[in-house]
Amino acid sequence: MTHRVTLDRSQGLWNLVLFGLAFTAPLVVLMTFGILDETSKGTAAGSYLLATVAISLTALSYGRMASIHVTAGSAYAYVREAISPHAGFLVGWGILLDYLLLPMIVSLLASVYLAASFPDIPKAVFVVAFLVFTTVVNVLGIRIASRANAVLMLIQGVVIIAFFALALRYIVAVSGAESLETVKPFFQADVPLSLTAKGASIAALSFLGFDAVSTLSEEARNPRRDVPRAVILVAVIVGALFVAAAFLAQVIDPDPVFRHPDAAGLSIARKIGGDLFATTFLTGMVITQLAAGVSAQASTGRILYAMGKDGALPNRLFAFVHARTRTPAFNLVLSGIIGLLAIVLTEEQGASLINFGAFLAFTSVNVSVAATWLRARGTDAPRNPVFWLILPLLGGVFSLWLLVSLETGAKIVGLVWISIGFVYLVWLTRGFSRPPPSLDEA
Image (cartoon, rainbow, N blue to C red; front, side, top):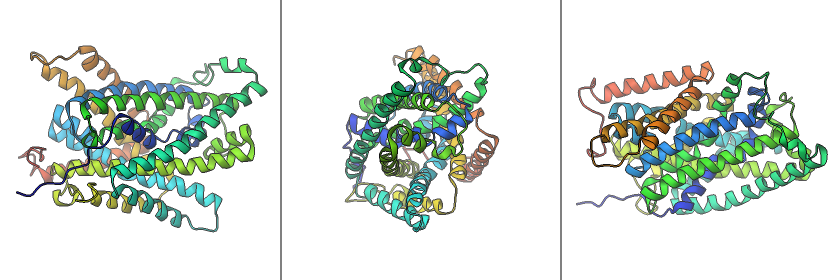
């Protein structure tokens, strides 16, 4: 009998937390601050606070499901097990678009900053170099990817600490410490809550690192204990960082109308620390994208691996694990190739494809926890209704609210993608005459 190569169980709690933080890229709060501030009309900190509440509730649901389902499939696997294989497939299909395009968007952001610094070099060169780096690191193994992320996160952490220190010094020197007592970054009487919520629907996408942690369940040393803890820790840590950074940025520059919203973070960095910190900030942003790229591609490979192992995608290719590096090498290379779309797509075009699947997955995982509680009623399995029913339903309502708050274009693209997945599901199940392939069959 041929021994099947499995993923490498080498990741402890803090490896998982670091992976999630790297995927989230905490410095992204300043990279996107101008756009979010413009959308929320000066209540960016309030948008991040709303997003943190919604994401924390959803992270609890991910943690609950991860504690009973040790699988790399994340939302796809949880919905499949708790609700139905068909629903699980469609949720997996929805979030698959997110993960397939995340490496592309990360490489696109990095190439934009690099091309601005080196205008004589074509953007395509930076895209290819970036994707080659992240693909090679990931194919070499999860241990190497984890070590690379540790170094990149250390550098990013220094930049973040410098930002907080310089921001506080600037605010105290220019406006006085009492200016920190304002609530305007969170709430303004003349700004409708719907605009703050619209900002939250954008901000919530910066939290995807907590979802990414759940894709490493088959590489965690103690997945039932460490994955749930890591999921919640990542959501809380990045939420606190995002709210605090957005608050300080809003106090530094309270005008919600930036001439160049994409460059608002750089403008604030130059204001509080001069050209030296502006250069450091640019360097930190590129390093942030490298760390996020490694994590995003790693998660994409594991999602495809889970679907391939289940037979939802061709098993021979997508469930392949390299014998020496013990990584889903085919999936990682495929993810890198898809990332080359960064050469021709814009950030806005790519981002519009991601929003829908993320909130669909968040809503579905919350519902899955409630469904698990309902199925467990009357059995000996302990299921606290507060954690297994009330909080998940609240998380589901928040997530659904953010989904509805998306722009019309994003919802149209998402529905089209789900429709394509539905047609594929009909073909895969021969008109629903048989269930989608399950883990047991694979």
